[in-house]
Every structure is written in structure tokens, then in C-alpha cells.
Length: 460
Image 1 (cartoon, helix red, strand yellow):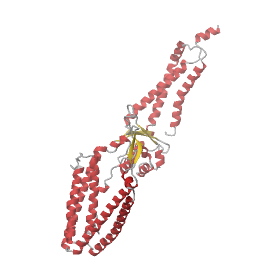
Image 2 (cartoon, one colour):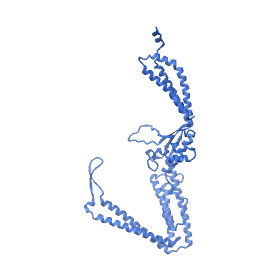
Image 3 (cartoon, rainbow, N blue to C red):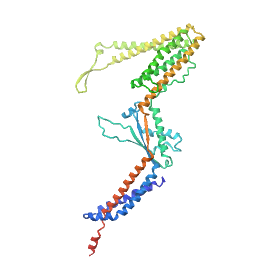
Image 4 (cartoon, one colour):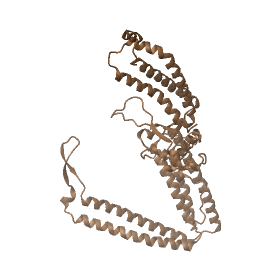
């Protein structure tokens, strides 16, 4: 059926086209004023024939449209998250709707196996997207960015045998997964369900757990800034309450564990660990001396400038109203001062790290712990892992609940229902029949055929 559709379409278009050409020919051949009454009589005379031809053509048109239903379709795609109205993705990058036809999306759609032997390029050739027109005007003061688009499908010879609904839904599912993986909120850094601490020394376990809980705190702070009043129905927690639990874990549970390890000087390999700390101290000391030297050099550079120059430099400029004023601008010494301050902070941190390592070395050197203390430390580690896993789970579920309520799933897809087509097909058929009748009646009305009375008079 798909192969003969172009010929049927050509025939359906040819019939009214002939009538239109005949109408144009008649108008161009008119050499005298048209007799309206005669034109009406001609229309009445040919109306039964035109109507019959129009009905037959209309039936053929409806059949053509009906037969073409498997070869064309569409679905509406709506971005439901708040930033979409600003033309942005959830992570604030520019939204590009054409990504639904990207190679990665269509490749994943083909890999599902639901599209047979079709290639991504063959699928892409059948799809198009257009923006849903908004209602109302757009002004400079009220800019509008569409969040709704219609993706249309028109079969090709390669996809004619493919179920259009399966194809469109497969592409939509693939795009949704792609969109979530690329632009959706990432919670991987919060997941701590299976912590493997095998092989880590006791102090390293504390440092590792410190980094993980710090990540949870930072993530909750970011979410808190986004919405400070949200309370999850799934966990009965807010971002602030989860953050406070994480801080309590950091300041109480983790510090208690660390204090216990240092009190008894626990280590799985004490000599090796002390050697490592000494090595870290040597490297840190080198960085400390570099930062201290850089700090001194910048202070010396600042001292070489004249005092009057280093106070301020005023540059003539204009304000928003066009008025002149003197603006203070930075000079070289300002940058030297900023760099000196940064190097001093680095040097201070280096010194603190060295002192901390020295304290660890002192605690490990005393080595008062035994197997009983190590067993107690192992029990504390298991307890910390469970506590951290619980906090992480609450954080993940709270974030997911927040996204579910605010983003509405990010994207919604509405596919064309089967009953919707019938009304649309009937409308197109009715327009075709009306156009057919109108064109051929117009051709009859403008016909150059002479009235029978005039023909008889001319013969006499």
C-alpha cells in the first residue's frame, strides 16, 4: 500500500488542479462582460455531475488518509521542570530540543531491539520537531520560551513496515533516559550503601568517612539554598535536618572514633604508618617553605612601590547616566597583596598538617592498644558505616522526592490517541470536497460557452 500512495495522492491533487487551470483559462479568454445569469444556469446544469465527482473524490481522499494512518503520527513533548521556561536544562545549561534526534539517543533506541533492522539515520529521516505556538503576544517585557513541542513522524520506504507507535515510544523513552542521565540531578556521590573499607588503616578509615560525610553536608547545603522550606513526605526530613544529622555524625560519632584510635595508638601496621606520616611531613614541609618564600617575595615587591601610588589610582569614567566620575582601579600592588594572602593561607595549612601528623606519630608511638581495643575499633567502624548509610539514604530519598514534586518528571509525553485521527481525517476530507466543488463550479461559471438563445439568433 505504501508504494502506491504517491500515485493516489497525485491523482487526488490532479483533479482539482485541472479545474483550477480550466478556471484560469476561462478568465483569461473572457473578451466581454460575463453574463451572471447564464453562468448560474451553467453551474446549476453541471452541479449534479460535479457533486457526484466530488463525492467520489472525497471517498478516495478519506480512504487515502485512512490508509496512511499507519505511516504518520505525532506526540507532544512538554518540559515540566521550572527552568525550562527560561530555555535551560535542570543543571542550567542551554536546552537543545534537537537532541532528541542526536546520534546517542537514536543509537540507544535502535539497541533496544524494538525497531528491527533500522539504523539511527533511517529513524532520524522520518522525524521532525516543531514548537507549539503560544497563545497571546510576546513583548520585550514579557519574553516567552516554549516548553511544549510536537514531534512528527512520517514513514519512509524503510520504516513503512514498522509500527509507528512502537517507533515513537521507543525514541521518546530513549530521549527521556538520555535527558535524565545528562541533565538530571546526580545523587551518586550521596550513595554509601556498600562501603568497602578493607585494607584501610584505622586513621585512614576516619579520613575516608570524613570526606564522604563532608560531601553529604555540601550537597544538603546546596539543596537548602535552593529550597529552605521543603519537607519530604517520603522521609519526613528537610535538607537542613539531614545536614544537621550529617554534621552530628562528623562532629560526634566520627570524632569519638578518632579519639579512641589515637588514645590507644591503633594501627594495622604501626611502623609502616609512622614511616608514611614522616614522608608526608617532608613533602608538606617543602610546600610550606615554597609558600612562605612566595609570601615574602610579594611583600618585598609591595614595599618597593611609593606609598602615594599604592594608596589609590583614580581613572576618569562615565556612570550609567553618562556623567563623569573618578573610579578607583586595582594596580599591581593589589594583585601582589591578594597573592601574598593566598600563599600565607597555604603555608598556615601546611604547618597545621605537619603538626597534626606529628601528633598522630606521637599517639601511635605510645602504642597502648591491644587486640581487645582493635576489636572495639572494628565494631565502631561497623556502627559508623551503618549510620553513614542511613544518613546517605535519607539524603538521596529526600532529594528524589523534592525532584519528583518540583520537576514533575522533567518531561511528559502525550501520544496521539486512535480516536483523535477520525475527526481530523473527516475535516480534511470535507475541506477537499468543498474545494473540489468550488473550483469546478467556478470553472463552469466562467465558461466561454455561448448561451443557446444567442446561438439561435446568430444563425438567423
